[in-house]
Length: 482
Image (cartoon, rainbow, N blue to C red; front, side, top):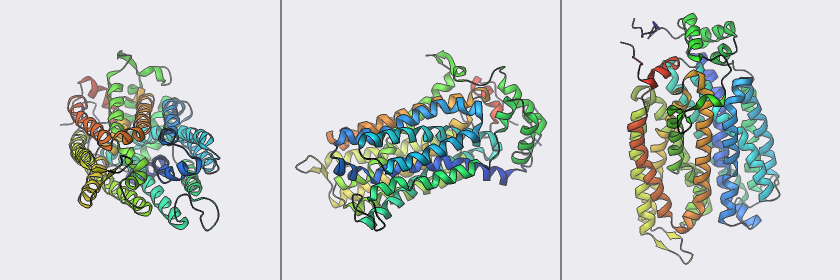
């Protein structure tokens, strides 16, 4: 049986697969909240503009406001997780999201809705950091990519659920601004429904074990051994020694650990930041934040626009399922490069369609029958290209690519960069769209192309590499099993 340079047996029986899958699913429910919150605003934007008389700039601020909270939550989540443990931070995130979902539903104007959304964003940002870090730390190496992909799968299920719930609520009310049969405005119930998955996430967080790497850092090695025996298997004593050595720090992990010689940060942290930025700069969340109003603006009815958004989400789920199958077979780097090129082609097509479309009196593009079909196909190809590559693979990489001693802190920095990038794209899209949708999609296509070259040059393949070997991989001294 093959061993690596540290004597760790490769191909050893994995006794904890079923248990590892269960706790990974439970942790990934934080991604469900992430996805639900991402998409729930989609169905409310038109109603908010009508009810409160706000314009495109104000709409952009309201829609994107949660993302600022997400950036702050992500930044501090790593430090909180290092101090209090992963499951406790998950529980805190669930409680905050539950409260702010109800607060958003009861908002009386754009200001207090923005406050509730920012506060809820703190929880979403924290969950976005903790889930991939926890899954990477609890998963056997041969399953880490697939289990890490559960984060993105939960995100797309959350998006799909929010869009489906929005579609059902607006259909029952005759529109997002209408009254539902059981009382209340449709868009308010869209926000309130998010409290249900928040409660489920809290209950699941109560029933998952602590990360063994956190326990070793806290000098609770007996507990760490018991968890490794149940969920990972193999030579547990050797694994404990490797974790202890990989931490090689006499203080608890902290945000200052990511400082380095490359513009103030370690080079690997910059790689994580740019991966996060490119994941957002291709404009994927424009589809899920604005797709309903976007398709209405080019001639779709409100009901058809809602249905089209649901179809986008189904495509998203299909692509993510494919990613779960491929990520440990093909590898992370190849998938990212494939995705960059497919997204570039799809986004470029959309840019050309909108650039050549006729416009109405308000300068909105009006798509002909053939143009509408091509635009819809291109949009779904883009979503599919993202879903089986950049969507899940970036989260897998962020959860595993950093050395143990800086993982939670570095992931927090990278995730904060992701949320800030998401905010920039979201808040600028309404104004870009007014200038011309061809400009928006042209920019996103350019970022997709640049991301191809970035991955080719800067990203190292982590498929099959133990977490304890990530520092050696980064330094170039890692040698794979023979």
